[in-house]
Image (cartoon, rainbow, N blue to C red; front, side, top):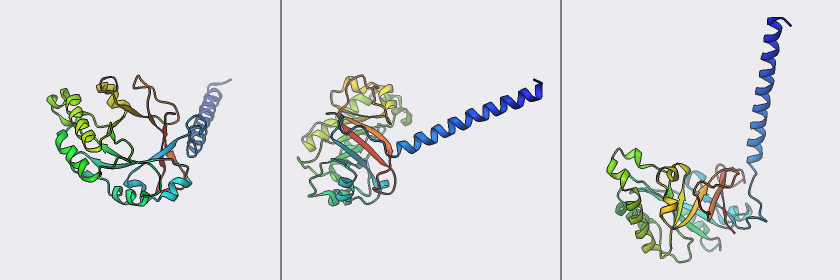
Length: 232
């Protein structure tokens, strides 16, 4: 086989492999649109909702098979989800359990964040335990003092939220946050972990909630749903 023929053969082989990879990726993406963990293994499943999902009704969620809903409520010292109050009202009286999520900002003092949360989230013993989303790293603050005090300040915020709601919080920890601070091993609260399609293990101990698919197409809202399951 000459050099030119050999080069053409290699190019065609490489192209065939590339097409297989692309086709496999497209197939996987298409399958992911409808994937949920087994209902037999995880009988209680629900959703995480925010303003990007648009207006949502109880009938929509129940039609999609959601047995509970967590709603993004507040963020940092002044962030408030534009759909939170509307969705709370839309789901009121439906019997669907609802919980609130606060996106924690390590660059902002705990007292200011707690004031934001308690202003927007009503005290209601029928609500699900509040969740704290831990995604933003303190490295973004540019202050080594803040970086060193992440756990202490977070604990102050947790105590204030729990005093308001009367329930222990759930820590929704991202892999990056856990890798940096090891919070799961140091703060004894229920965990909410995230990993598409595969059960997450990065916290080193069992989770209570798992965001299992962030791409679920269920015909609800303005985009894909973030699908969450409860540990049985």
